[in-house]
Image (cartoon, rainbow, N blue to C red; front, side):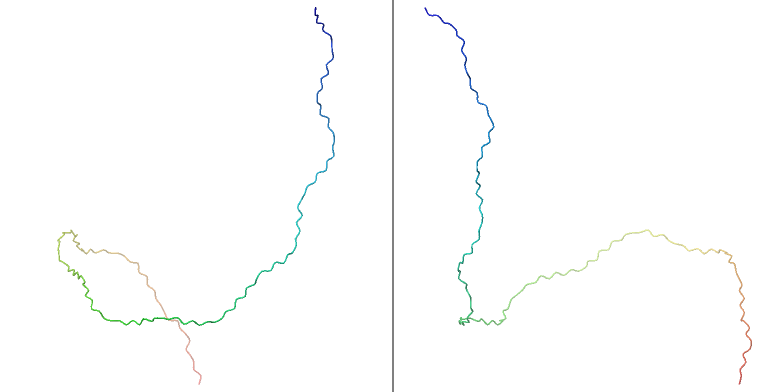
Length: 126
């Protein structure tokens, strides 16, 4: 006969725990360092010199002169003459009659008397 007996037993469970730890690592960063080096490069230098060269080219000259050619030109002539057309239009004009009336207006008069000043007689010495 089989019998199952429970026996207490300890089970160990492991868990990962982060522990901070300092590790020194060398980091190498490559930075370009430009260097200038003069290199001679020869290029040709062109010098232009003008030389006079005379080349004769044939040339045709056309001499034109006027020639009278009779041409008939037709012109339309329009003559306008005034035609008398009289229209009689009656217009009323007032007749003006001039009538003279006598009107007496009194004007104030002032009398101004002027006299010459008396100067002593002039003596002439001889």
